[in-house]
Amino acid sequence: MNAMKIVLAAVFLSLLIAPVLGAEYVGSDRCKTCHKDIWEDFMKTGHPYKLRPVDEARQGNEEFGIRKVTELPNGYTWDDITYVIGGVWWKTRFVNETGYIVTGNAVQYNLETGQWVPYDPDEVAKPYNCGKCHTTGYNEDGHQDGLPGIVGTWAFPGIECEACHGPASEHVANPTEVKPEVDTSSALCGKCHVRGDPSRIPASNGFIKHHEQYNELLASPHKDLSCITCHDPHKSVKNPMVDDAIKMKCEQCHGDVAKEFAESEMAKEGVECTDCHMPFAAKSAVKRAEFEGDIRSHLFRINTDPSAPMFTDDGKYTAGGYLTLDFACLYCHTDKDREWAAKYAVKAHKFEEEEPKPTPTATATPTPEKTATPEQTPTKEKQKPTPGFEVLGAVAALLGAIYLLGRRR
Image (cartoon, rainbow, N blue to C red; front, side, top):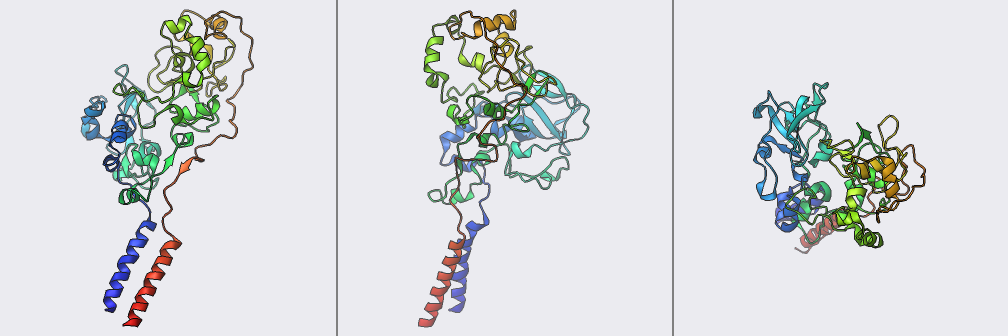
């Protein structure tokens, strides 16, 4: 009888203590069982495919509009490649058989142009240290797959559901009582869509650098909004199979301006708010023209002063939290200049000419006030706390009951 009591106590104790050990990563496929519609939307984004084993990248995912990676740098075979970085919307880079990123003069493939371009040709052994944002369940210790060039390890390559919602094993085991993390703040997106100090916007070669939407948002008039005010976080703005990734249109907040603009000649020609207020001032892979990269800006504000600088003198940062007329206007009006644009920009929503008044310009991106940084997530709904003292109390009660049962016998 004593042996039976010990066995029962051990079973109950293991059941109570198991949650304390912490949730584990289970993979997005487990989410599909209950959240099929959201999962299917998510699989049409670039997130799950940011880093893929080479065989998966070569297969693609036709069901969700994800292309097969067929390109390969000259001089390499597929046996030389372990992982593919990207290869979905903008560009393809490669990780070699020892875990280092392939560098050289023609090793990055730009999807829009079909051209091979240089990537860090002067760096021979470039470690893959991007796992913090390119993978799920990242740990900075060790080397994934034992490859010396890879810094850290991960539970899953690519950005899966749990990269934002946290490890889900406890939620899967008890979905009604244990909820996944739900963080609706821009700071969550800003953990990866950021470069350097969030209060400054890095630039290079005449464009804002890529994946800096958080830096830009903090410097914009919309700094107090969340990314998901406008974006559905589970849907892609790039995938042609998706047409409802934007939840909130400009006119829903800026109704008066939109009504005025609708009567203008530009609106009648098909110009939209985003063409001017979100031009392609950032570059990931391709420079389409002198003032056109391949990623839309999230600065929104246009400085109508024709003398306002877009970048600092050294070209390393934006000069302020605004877009200049060359990026807002001249990437379409290529035969005009800033002075011409300034005459119309002041009343651009009517497209009427007016002499602009000089506006003060900043020499550095202003530091936003009272705005969440990537370390702050004020709107985060965490998983229910795992038992701590409750476990000890339950164990004590269990042992007490067993002791009383023995006394009665």
